[in-house]
Picture 1 (spheres, helix red, strand yellow):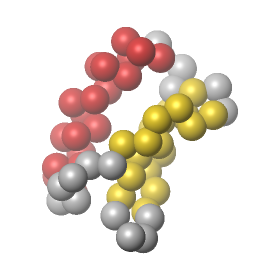
Picture 2 (picture 1 turned 180 degrees about the vertical axis):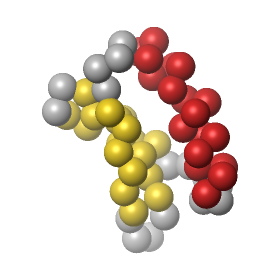
Picture 3 (picture 1 turned 60 degrees about the horizontal axis):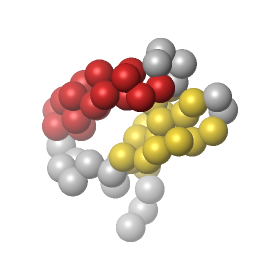
Length: 54
């Protein structure tokens, strides 16, 4: 499973776990969230992708 960590000031602030793991859907999931994240954190955040096992 792929999850996305939102890192701001060196700390993980949020972790998103998309329900659909299709590669295209993952891309659009993040694209749709970026404006909301910019409102919340400004431009000083980074999105990291990582895999976890269930």
